[in-house]
Image 1 (cartoon, rainbow, N blue to C red):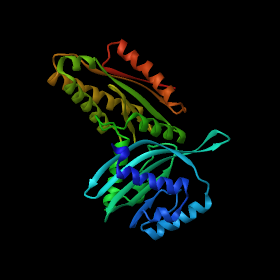
Image 2 (image 1 turned 135 degrees about the vertical axis):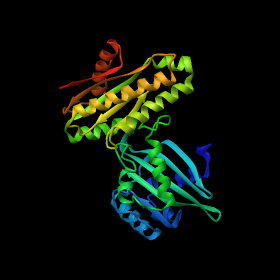
Image 3 (image 1 turned 45 degrees about the vertical axis):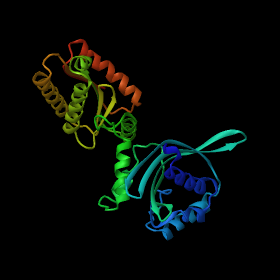
Image 4 (image 1 turned 30 degrees about the vertical axis):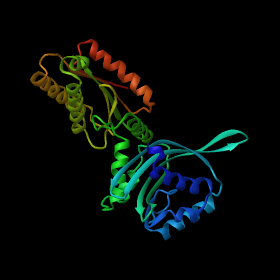
Length: 319
């Protein structure tokens, strides 16, 4: 099991030295000479053990109090012979008179290398963040052309953790966070909720593998129709959310929806002619800040207006 692997044990020794013992030397003994570290309390990255030691020294001197921690969402994978990478989300806290006082949430990625008969840390990405959709964004901006196999693996790992495994779209957690960030900036947006009409019939008549193909087709069509900066994610089942921000041209968005609906109808007629299925969209065009729940509930009601009139269309309300 991953929880009992040497990679996991190496991570535990690092966390113990960093959060509990606050022991710079024990951590440095675990690292390779060319250890790469980014994200340590917003400081500049370290490219070797000496630089990393300076980061540790300054950070531990500022914050010398130990903290308890809880590991969540641990994952690990082999990225090459003698090389592994692992990731976890970490909650740190302190006990104050028997009451748990939350300190922070962290995302931690560690690269482990086999060096002789021991296991060393070759990469450390430790970032204190309130949300996980931001993981890796700063890293990509700082080092877009890196050739480091560890950084390339980190890119892939961070990307995979925010994506829906079937469609390749953002997953719900990442999508909600990205939308919340955009809403904080203000400005006009369109929030759209899409549902595949009669999708159950696709699975019942053609089987779930074909149903997955239909869902992936729709997801890819939507993703390609909008900008890379727009947020498209799978909410669950056959529901997909599209958040267009900033949005100055509602008419252009409506033309995109018409084309997606038209292409879907053509695909179903050609490849799934034994059943009737279409797409229903509902959404709002607004500049008012809302919670994700408010956006979803409002758009869901609008979408069902489309369904009640037969589906196969869209309705965007403005406020």
